[in-house]
Amino acid sequence: MSINDTLSRIVFETLESFFTLKLIPEFYLKEGFFSVNSFVFCRILYKDQNRISGTLTKQKVIDGIQTTLLGAALNFPLYESLSHREILNSKITFCFADNLEPVDNIEKIEKDDGIWLKYNNYSAISLPADRKYDNIDEELDFLCKKSGILSRCWKDKENGKIEKFKLIKYEVRNER
Image (tube, rainbow, N blue to C red; front, side, top):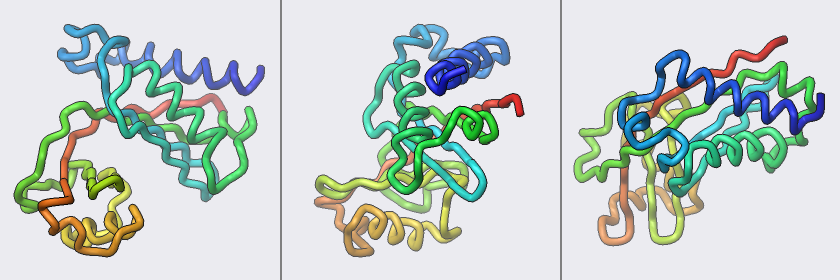
């Protein structure tokens, strides 16, 4: 089996599982799952490598799954591409978000919220499982640095924007 076959199988099984496990919210079913636009994140954990790939624009769910899986498995800048066997021995998680909500008060950000910080043409995302800090001020400062900007940029209401979102999460069960 080739790497492309493996990736295609993972995409197919992920979509199939969403339907059989009824993980799809009613909104997706009403609108048609394949035509819904969503932010998609893929995390591949392989040994000590934490590979995260995400879409920074909404796109069709099927396209987002394929794009982020390829990005995390084959085009991740910090590590070599994974082989067929390595992909099968990885823990793969997909997260979907489509309900971005502007944040005017950071006290409204909850522990299970994802955070998207935008500042001029820069942006950074924090998924709930990846939070570096429990304190939201510190997490937002970290996101400023992560996006290449000085900390506290999030306080600049004129150029900065904070949005939060909830995630729908699915973990792929690979054969070992």
